[in-house]
Image (cartoon, rainbow, N blue to C red; front, side, top):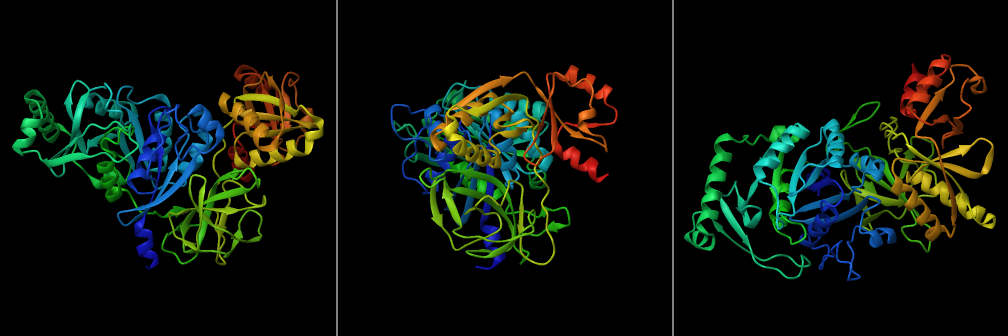
Length: 535
């Protein structure tokens, strides 16, 4: 195939939601229908040893949550699909944000009973800022849920985006028997299934006018469907594909990932509407996917996907050109040339060595520590720089050291690798190399750090929480930081790029310090620091 044909086949999307809305389960069922797996493992099925394919870390299997984004790839109906399954929990919002940078569209999952939840709002805002199309899947409609019209109103009022239902649940008062497809005016009734969604679901499909369906559905259910569709057709939004592409209208689907109810109709419609790989902005220009020059950026680094070898995999999103195994590329940040060896695509930890890849694809390559999150790789003589990813300011801090001083080497290696991943933010204590100061966005990050250092590096931690909740990057404006006043109860540390950071107890004390040190600039993130430096 030509480069253009390969690009047109690609669909690269992230699945976002509040925790427990069923995101990892939906990912699993898309793999099931795509033929990538033959038996789906339920995240909730604690009695079995089967776990979701995308939850590959041991801590994820134990807790039944996703703590890191995973990459899953498969072919379906002439499309090559790259799914980015993100952690729903707000404590891992940095990982989710970085992953969204690699996606061309997003599937927003909403629990039919709970509606739009807090973390969904945050993730939605990120998608909206990037202007990427958002598709909504209302999940768990096999449980008692809210009225579909109420959910549409909530999406509009809380998220500021109109919803256009592509299908509609058939039933009354949260008890649903099937789905009505508005485009084809067909009904699909789902048969009872006792496998809890481990197999593809059988169904009966036909025209809404077919007398068989009038008999299968009770009279009040059939009348309710007729009334609902009539109201949608007369008073609802009209479908506008341009608005979908610009992130102003969200196509809305109903189903249940756990029981496979509505999953296949969603997948097939989504693939028709979801965008192929799109042009990408760089600091120098706009990159066209069909450009012959290869460009990509690193959005994720994962250490120890194979614990026996302590490997380090760099995940990159290809933005233009054709990738070929063993090719040599320019690394923008270091100025070095790098040979990309053993390129892989993934089904979580299951790897396939590949010979080539195209724009939209996510690939992983081995790295010895040269590359970092947000780095740019390119061929050609013209320099290419994708913008740095934003840094989330940490709000929780702890001092950590290895309990066993004989494990110092493993401790330093583990901390270095996990910092490069972005699992936590690590700061150097100016007076000591025996301990680190760790900054986190959420409490669970500390748990994951402690677990992974113990199980992947054999290091047990001594962790002492610190009384700080604010970090400010310091721009000295020509002054010596030792001249700063009223910082006795604060702490000065250095981040991983040797920039000075002040850790402060609270916002009130932060304002107090800023007022008394007019010769210094205090930035909430290093992104601001860089911009001010350039000015």
